[in-house]
Image 1 (cartoon, rainbow, N blue to C red):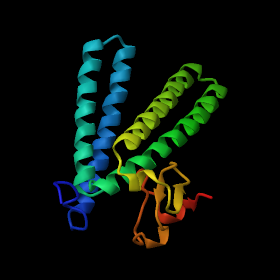
Image 2: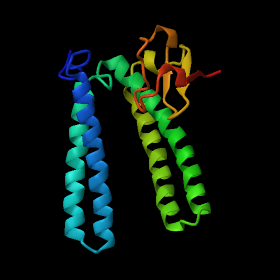
Image 3: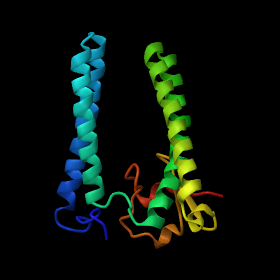
Length: 184
């Protein structure tokens, strides 16, 4: 076992997960403050807030790994990345819909920014797909197992869902098994 997932299943796991959420919130807050500072032409302040946001994001990543939120053994790692790629494509579609709704509500500038986010999700999907095709073991590249999609975020997992532990949740959005539907 590597340095990650050491707290999984321990008494400290819940506390670590809470800290992970706090760091994610901190990252979002500092990025929002950076955008506000840019709007006020405070470029130096915006830069400092972006740096703080990146540090919070890195801390959240450490805590997520430490509590076993994401897999780090090779096959599980690539299986996750493969499912993540599908979720990013799903995210692009969902975010385009959000952009259209925001535009319809009269917020054209915000809709334009959200459309940029959709394009970024497409890019993320393409990158993760290329990485999987290049580096994943052949057993991961093949689609020989039953596949399920999370109805909330679009993450795709392979293998029998019934074989997953009762407390299995989507590794992206945290939804329970019941949020997954079989892909025909």
